[in-house]
Image (cartoon, rainbow, N blue to C red; front, side, top):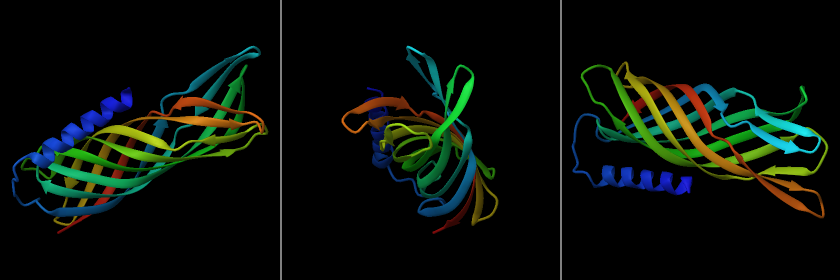
Length: 213
């Protein structure tokens, strides 16, 4: 149900942008490409209750790297798109004993519809909403059933400040919340089990971008 809400909100905002009257200004038709890096943290650690005791599944904090582009419809709205990469260590904790179960590699391909607060300074605050497709891979480090982490869609909200130092060079500082869930598949040979997991995350990134028309 959450995914439906995100999809509806994203579609409504996109429709509002694309159906609005064209407001040509200096930013209209501008493109930007850039690279970014920052901090990323999965917020939803998981607890599994078993007869032998509780097992906590913990995702370590990690770095995020990405390449991205932006198209400016005008100084009030833009469309951002890109590809990110993160790798998390996945740890099982039982009775105070921690065991690295594996690494999770996550590559989202995404887009974001952004609204800008245009002003006379070089700093432009913005906020946006969007969605992406998350390619997930689990690199198993312990013996047991074969484990696969499924790919799935995710949704996000962002807020940040874009600082344009020159006509061609600028910097983005962005906060991002991601609503993303997936599914683990445990293959026991004669039996396959599925377990859903929340991978909601919070990230802070710094991006450097080049503007052109």
